[in-house]
Length: 357
Ligand code: ADP
Ligand code: MG
Image (cartoon, rainbow, N blue to C red; front, side, top):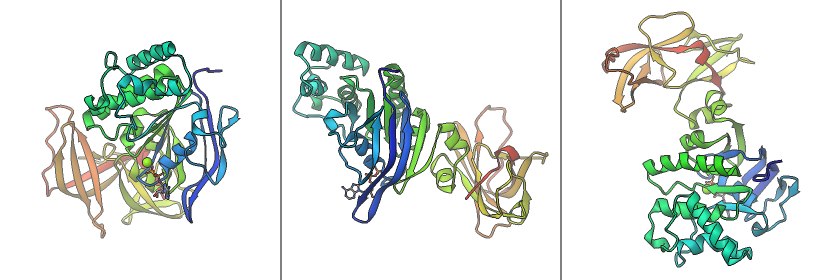
């Protein structure tokens, strides 16, 4: 038994607003001590699911268990969870210390123990010495840390966070992603983290649950979700990809009438989409076995620092289908890149060639 965390079991949770399903039959198991991210576009139901876990929203149907205990009828303050809201929800008229100590006060913890736990929480989030500051005297990043300290001050076994980094600028946000993950590894509480940012989800999570229109679309490790998306929505939403129409007839795949070879045989004939990740596609000067090749015209070439992004319009393609190819900026001695307007050949290894529907 791990005493610092609890597993969460969500069964068949449905939440309707009039005829609209904010959540539709969502079931998932979150392991004890796991960092689970709920990822989906705006309006997909992420906050609703988090609020069902916290107890602020009652589902119309379904069950939520923390460990062996059914909590669906328990009010939020009895669920023993730490929570970081999207807007931090700090008390502006209180000091940092008072904000962080607030949950302890509510729980009737002694003044001495509150003082000790507040100091510990402030140390954990690297705000030691700032306890007497007013909230208005803090930067956005510091406020975010105060909200986090308040959520962990009573050492909850479950920590819920709703887009906690969305108000921060990119550089700070990326630093905080690493820091929050390290904090989780230190404290080891089960963490449910909501974001609409796929890169953030890939960076931080043990596993990701992708939600769209209130439904669970795919659950897996960052690697599984990225390398084996279940469908075109996920292939498009997670990472970059060009999706090219592929027809499979009598088990044979073709793109614009030309034969291509897939990593795995499709289960049945039909129309699919080939997922081309820009970093897996490459410029090919000669064709060797083991890869598929597409020829087209280079229509754009963009320097992005660590890589060059090439946009290629495929030949023999009525829709003007584009493929993106990312060439790493590996060395100054690397071969010259083609010029815009040139015809180029793009390769994609058979092992990297898969379709989604
Ligand atoms: P997300 O956090 O993924 O952006 P939400 O869970 O906040 O999405 O919302 C999911 C859907 O449910 C949205 O379409 C939203 O408008 C709707 N919704 C959320 N709360 C309410 C409410 N109290 N009344 C009516 N509709 C709501
Ligand atoms: Mg939300």
